[in-house]
Image (cartoon, rainbow, N blue to C red; front, top):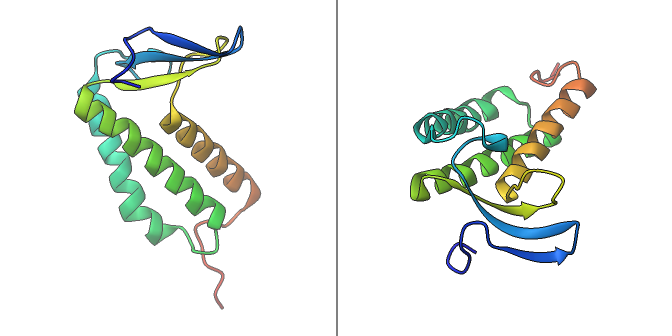
Length: 132
């Protein structure tokens, strides 16, 4: 998409509802904190470190959904992080016209957060093994 599109260029997929739009996002969600790329890189690297180092140690293997959520968060974070490091911005392209433009990494992050919240609401002892 980056090689064939100019910023702001769009292709209608479902007219009036969904299109692909090439957007350079220099901020975070909804474009907040624009041009603070170094802050987002540091935060992303910290999150990657936390998930890789502490996730397996503190989340029991029996909580498959929570581990899957962490994998989604890690993948989404790495996707946006790689864009920020290589390009200096995140490439967004899914445009539902009634919502800000987003990308696949954003979907992974939102699904991961949703699964974490769902897991936390479902279980009182996510971080404990019940081996007796």
